[in-house]
Length: 289
Image (cartoon, rainbow, N blue to C red; front, side):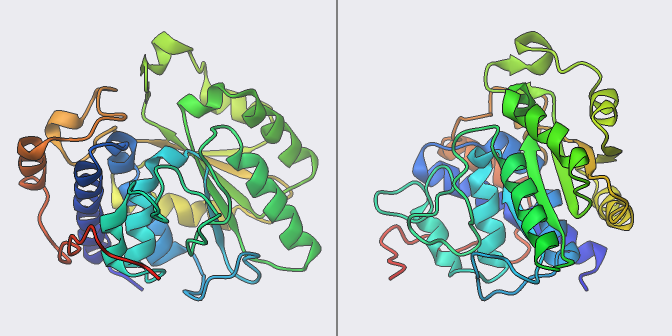
């Protein structure tokens, strides 16, 4: 088990990985990636039970789906540091012929990725399918899925949200990154999400809330959610985060949703994040074969 300090250090290093990947690629989505770093660190280094030998069916292990696939630099950093592939491969983010595409894909066979998630709104449906398959197979492990709050404007999300309680899917924990921002501006200006807790409750979900940028809150709420499984209802965690968390000039705005920092901005951002585990060696010629 990792200590709180170890998890916080890992999340800090992951944030450095995110910034460097996006900078070197000169494109990508740093804002929400930074905001969700604490969550994925907690999941992969403390909460989930899984093997580093990747199996697509996820049998007898906890499974995670990233529905808001544009925050791929975060997931790639987590997967690499968890041992799924060589960390040097982060150098190839968004490069031609790289397995680390801007949005996760399955064609290249990247360990850890079970479904492509470039199109928003589909991940919750996939996660429900996996949860039902686990139940049919007598597999008592848990399925996790992360969505963005702007993604909740997709109708398929609510079709899935309606189906899970109907089928009594109680081995599923959905997490919504509730940062209030999306590519075109604040949610409230683009399309108001209304009373999110009341909406999910009305669909039949057990609803929890947490501070997604406080590791203690993340750990405690994820453990509470696990304790609530097995009661014939799915669980959703509404996770309050700051887009760009950890870098002061990126926080509180949608402007860093999909913009890469230049060299000066990268240096300024990294100065706010201590190098805790060692930066990955940047090698744009790295070949994973």
